[in-house]
Image (cartoon, rainbow, N blue to C red):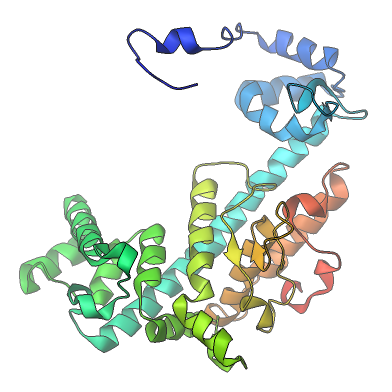
Length: 350
């Protein structure tokens, strides 16, 4: 429904009245009436009191019965047989721990990406950001460099207002408002870094990608493939996907069964360690060579950490977390996470 007029029309467009408030006891009675097994009353009361019915409903949604084709709603209110509240709590805990693990991995990727971008752009010019020729400007984004400089100004101003940004204040006072790449990288968000990488020219994209462990320079490509690769490096879409996943993790959204923006895998699957990336989108069988489920993002993080954080235990801890959850939660499947068969035996997860 559209929001035509907040003052006069919006409320009349609401198709159903808001649901009435229910106490914790009434919420438990409702779940039982819908055939959920409350195997521990005090546990259910604690979770509903601290996490909330509405938030938990996202974790038991996939356990609601499927409606017949043609029904007005996709799922019914009743739960599938053997749906236990304690298992829903386990799923919530798994997702929470997975978010923490993902955030930790992407943090290390982000620091390495900042350094790689600073090295590459700094090697071009100390004021590389301010020269339009250093960036990929296409017909459909003629103002991309203007937007980049606007972002730079916005992030610097934000940093100057922060009480602990002594290094930014020092650089502005000493060198002026045009700052070197290695200074500016510290004020960028991860999404800014992702957009910046997309704007780099092909050679610089390739250099940055190689520095963080996604080295496509070693691939044997046909002339047509080489031309396609120069149009936009596959790390570009991968970083966009990771920025979405980072935001989900930071804002406590569900990630175990999320669908992310697609990441092209046509060239990535050719790299050692990334062969298990999916080559077909789960919901679009005709769309080849892309990954949009959690496994692809986790594998990419693990691959990058092998280069930027040698000896890191991140991949092993992530694999153990997932394997334990798949064993302990009866209804959790590897397909929901996008994990392929035999994933546990891949050397990157050892």
